[in-house]
Length: 555
Image (cartoon, rainbow, N blue to C red; front, side):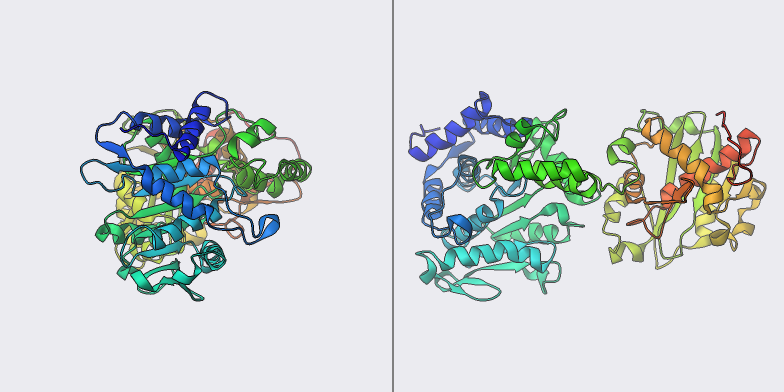
């Protein structure tokens, strides 16, 4: 690679060197991004073209801030932003002479200027990337979010020397000379399948309940020579969204576990063991600390989170420190649920004593069965859902992915065929020594006669707090102690995140379907199965309120 000796490249190389030698505090993922940049200099299939990088920087420096105390002043990219732009625009493939990166993800806390930075990139790709009829989009979960980046771009270009190049409308920025445009894009945008994007800014991916828009963009860029899908996001609280899993894949790319050579990745997040109340961590994960993010602001947010806790603390950790934090209303944290993995093999369950819990939903919804094996403290699950429910996407999770991974059975039609369900279940139960099948009498009364050879094992388990409290507390305690085996099932993890408890004045508890934020059927099935087991094996009723004495359970 030719020697890079311009002022621009001196800044880029200087930033990378300062991160790697420790002069600039950084998390592991940021260091890996810089190490990737340094390693790429040795590759013979790549070369670095500094011309588009310098062109982009000149464009950015020609723009002005339009709000706040910096209004009217020239913009200046910080070194970390220039490093990102240099990687995106500079690296090219020797074989094609085209840009190496088709995808880019920048994962950074709020108040670090990421939206303005993304707007600059979008405008450059529309105006000066040399792409005829370039279609550029500001994509987001809804119109309001999509307009944030788009409106920023409108104000930036309106107050620049380039204003005469474009026509600015309410819903688009058009460059007539090249027939190029920049528009907002959401799931409600019509004719999405006809898009031919040259570039897309995917804003706040943590809020995207599905990857529907992202997939539309990905499938639309194939006709472009060197497109760019640029995602920017902070952390969130709902770890069931696709981006939470996508982030783990991106980490694996940086660590070398997976390979995706056309994807640039820059992540600012705490390392394992970092404390949320440590000012050194605040600085490490916020690259614009002391620039657009004032230390006094972070300190005041911290003090409020310290005093109020709850949702205020969760917001501080997610938005200011880029930490995924469950809502404080969640019963058990996702980390604790995920830690219930002992590495057992499902094949070892055959022939073991099994207690079953069934949560039979309405015919058009998800049905859950828990197979509980107390000898090994393992809970295996069967989840079934009608195909129509998958197509609705009202639950805002990727049922198709879970189906493809083997965690979910999708049944054709709009409703669950009860005969098919019972037949499938009985065949599965034949693998084990079934002791009891606990069920909610309200939902199961009409199919009980179909259980045939397992009729004697059927056990009516009412869903009132009188019966549910003891097994719910038992399950909660074991999960928090990481004593169970869930086999890495992503559906039960999602359902645990949805659980909100009902509590009575005496601190008795049960999962509350009405108040929970989404489906919890698998958790209910687990509680039912454990309830049936506790009732049968302890030799006494598991009801509460039968008397007012203290009861100790020996398990």
